[in-house]
Length: 164
Image (cartoon, rainbow, N blue to C red; front, side):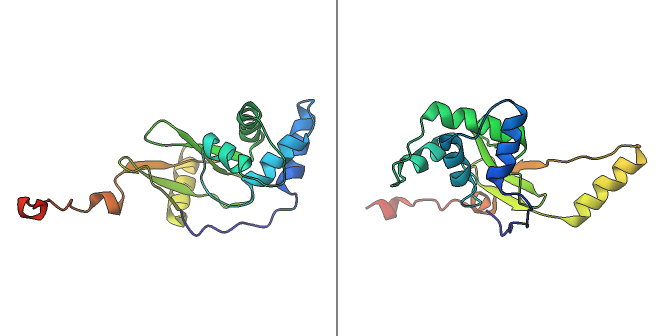
């Protein structure tokens, strides 16, 4: 996790989701609103099971079924409010794509840790390459896979005398 801070947005995530749902002929149900509020309560990466667990731990009595969570996550992705980031274990995790600055990820193949970063020189390079090719960038997504600093540390070998 990084120190990315939220950016000011004119419209709340709930209102933005309501607008999207209206374009799809749907409405913002109490369950969907509960999900959106929980998702945007903090900026943490999460998977669907973690969200279901967080929602089931709520004490306000607002229960949401697992299938509703999965459908709502797909709708939030389609609406542009969330995006999925692939992890080495083939499990998608979600993050806010609304209300946070453009950023990229370093993803550890061993422990699955995600490191968010912003690098203006990367954005400048992408703009230069796009201009050279007559291309207009609407968005970009960079996921770099490798080993984090923790996993690169040499493993301490256990000596036989330590086992006695």
